[in-house]
Image (cartoon, rainbow, N blue to C red; front, side, top):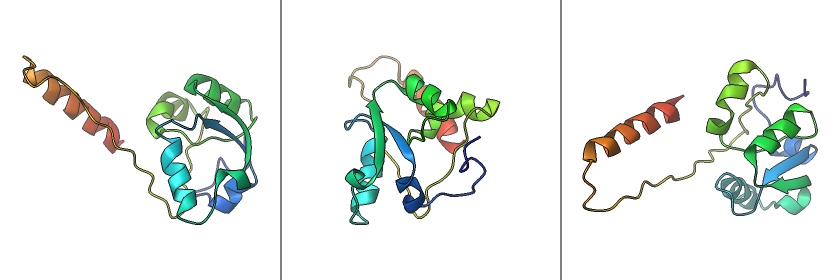
Length: 127
């Protein structure tokens, strides 16, 4: 088990000393992290980024093999969290929220379906 796995929170400074396995630059979860660093006059150049991947499953597998830590959406780790394979540790003094938009045609014929999807999303977001 990784030394941070039992921590209640982790600081950016602690993350700086870890091997990072990150999503690509355009990934929705990476952008808020980089913005968080920028607000503290920091950049990823100051971190030990081992690799960048687009495949979330591969990132999680590498983390479970203790090859590094990552910053990905909590929703992407629900199963691993429930099984104990991964731990989710909040970053101190951060609130990295990404906006998710639902797009559909104006004349979409099933408005109840849209409401159901919104309800499911809100339930998942609350977890």
